[in-house]
Image (spheres, helix red, strand yellow):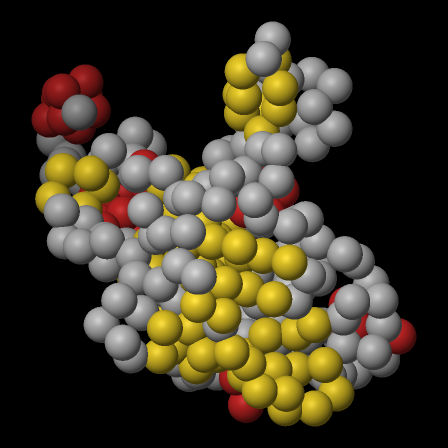
Length: 276
């Protein structure tokens, strides 16, 4: 700035910022506001897989409430303002904690699903699942049967899954005879979170809980999470509980849904859907 101004003053010209500097100065407040909103208020995410179908579809764009469970420092994710904790039935976004692997008799977190390398770095990925178990809860899972603190979680069958056979994720569910159910997940206050799940036992038999790596009792500071597509979700049944410090926020709204070129395009019926 000093060199530019001195040069223009010597030439007798009026000082003007270069175009890139002028644009940067104009855009900086906008960029700052966007960064603050994404860090502390709401952040958009795109659903990449079918593990939360039929609640969330592949191609759904969702908004996540970043302050639902407290304000956290960007990058470090350390909570500096506590505004509450997840409730049973919440749909949450979190940083994937890694797979549970045995290493010399101890369980460690690894990025290697096969556990051939227990010290493989855990990839920095955002995952989305539903909270099933709170700290201190006793959770049992046996196939389609889910028990929370000894009480079976009831579900009513809605009917067969109806999808677009041109989409691969729908084709799998249709070929495997997936059915849709309304599950009634009770919260501590006695209220029920009524949400849809999919079952397709012909596709996969999920791990039971408890198992050799995942105990029945949810540890303190941890949450047990599962996908709504119960037979096609890599969740706590495989890699254990989700630590509280990995939480990113609570999913609350679908603001756009893109089914793909030739397979539905924009699904206007899902836009504005509140996530339960």
